[in-house]
Length: 368
Length: 206
Ligand SMILES: Nc1nc2c(ncn2[C@@H]2O[C@H](COP(=O)(O)OP(=O)(O)OP(=O)(O)O)[C@@H](O)[C@H]2O)c(=O)[nH]1
Ligand SMILES: [Mg+2]
Image (cartoon, rainbow over all chains, first blue to last red; front, side, top):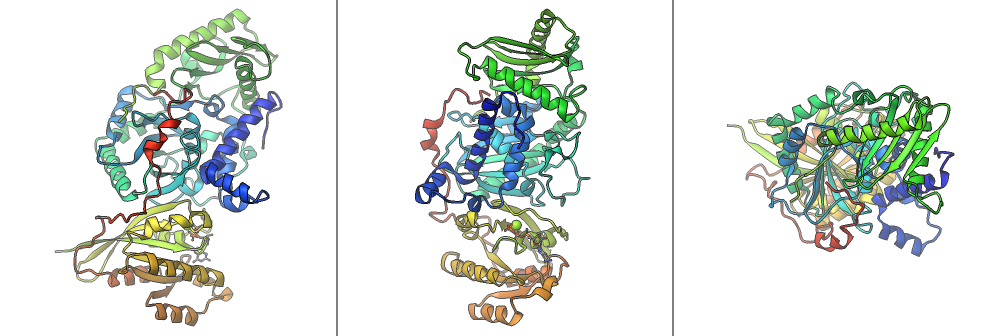
C-alpha cells in the first residue's frame, strides 16, 4: 500500500475510511458488528474470500483518484444536449418499483445519475459502485449483465440493495479478457487508474429483489438508447477525445494542472495529466501536494485556523490551494511565475470553469 | 411455423466447479483458463433449436458459488424452470455440496423444476474422485438428469443443455416471463425506512 509521506495522518485516515467502506459494501456494518460481537478474533478474510480484487483496486484508486480525494463526483465532460437525451431515456416509469438510482457510467465517470426526489446519493457510494462495476469479475464477464447484492454504506450501512450492471460497450475489445488483473499499479510507468475504467455501463440500483422487472426495464432503455442513436452520440464523444481536456485548452500561461471542485454541486473537474506529470513519480508528487493543500485549507492537519489560500513553491513547481464559498481549487504552475501570476491563473481557471460548466458538471438531472 | 419457448435456468454448485465456464462454453463456445469467481450472479441467454423447428431460449442465471452468496440462491431458483447443479469430478466434497443444493431445491423450488446433476472437468479424469457409477446411482435415486462435461474441451456441454431442453414441457407456452414472485423472495430494503439517512449535506447535488 502506498501512503504518501507528506500529510500522512489525514491521507491515511481517508484511505482507511475508503477501505472500510469497501468492506462494508460487501459485508454490511450490521453483519460485521454481529460477527465481532460473537467472536472477537474472527478472521474477516473468510467472509471476504474472493473479494481481494475489490480491495486491491480500491487501493489503486486511492492513490490517484482525485474525485475520491476531494469526496466528489466526477462527471464525463459532455454536450449538455447529449446528456439530457441520455437522462430522459433513463427516467424510470412509475411501473418499475423499487428503483433507487439509475446511473450511466462511461470511462469511469458519471454520464448521468437519476434518483428519486427524496434520495440524493453520497459521492463515496458512487466511488464504491465505480470500483465494483469495474471489478474484473464483472467487467471481464462474458455475461450480458450482473445482479449483485451491495451495501452502499452512506445510503444505509446496515442493509443490502441490489445492483443490476450491464456493459453497453466495452472499449478495449483488443485486450484479452482472460488476463488476470494486475494487482500492482506500479508495474507500468504509463499506467493510469482510469485506463482500467473503460467501457460504458448502465447501473440500476434496486431496493427490491425482483431482478426480472429490472432486467426487462434495463433491456428496454438500452434498446432505446441504441435505436435512437444516443449511445452512438455518446461513444463518438468519448472516442473523439472530447470527454477529456488538457490545460492547453484553457490557454493560461504557466498553468500545468488543476483540480476544481464545485462545492455546491459536490462535483470535480480536472484536465488529463500530461507533461510534466505524465510519469507516475511526478504525478504522485503533485497529488501529494494537492493533498497537503487540501488538508491545509480544510484545517485538517491540526492547525487552529483555516487558511483560505495556501501557496507552496518548490524548485519543480508552484502549487496553490484556494477555498471560497462556491469552489475549492488546486493548481500547479511553473515555479518561475510570481505569486501574483499564480493568483491570476487561479482566477482565470475559475472563469473558464464557469463558462464550461454546462459540459463539465451534471446539472438538473431528472428526478422521479 | 416455428415455435419459441423460453425457460429460466439456474446454475448452482460450489465455487470453482466450473459453472461460469460451462455457461461460457454453451453460450460462446469459449473457455478461459483463468476465470474470476462470480460475484452475485451473471445473466446470459442462449437459444437452441430442437427437431421440428422448435427453439428453446434459455435465460440463464449463473450464480456465485462462494458461501457468502448462499442465501441469495432462492431468488434465482424460485422462478426457475430448470436447474443445473454442478460438481467437479476431481473433488468429492463438491458432490456433497451438490447434494445439499439438490435437497434444497427439492424442498423449496417449484415441484415441476427439472434438475440436472452435472459432473464437470472430465478432461482431468486422471484425478477423478467421483466415479460415474456413484453419481449416476444417486441421480437415478433422486430422479435427476445426469451428465458429465468438460467446459475446457466442450465435451458433453451442449448435450446436457439439449437434454434439458427436450425434457422441459414444450406443450403449453412456458410460464417463464410471468414471474411468480414468491412471498419472502424479497431480500431488499424498505425504501421508506431510508428517509432518515437522506439529506446529509455532503451528498451530491445534481
Ligand atoms: N480443466 C478444467 N478446468 C475447468 C473446467 N471448467 C472450469 N475450469 C476451471 O476451473 C476454475 C473455476 O471455474 P469457474 O467457471 O470460474 O467456476 P464457478 O463454478 O463459476 O465458480 P464461482 O463463480 O466462484 O462459483 C477456472 O480456473 C476454470 O478455468 C473444465 O472443464 N476443465
Ligand atoms: Mg462463476
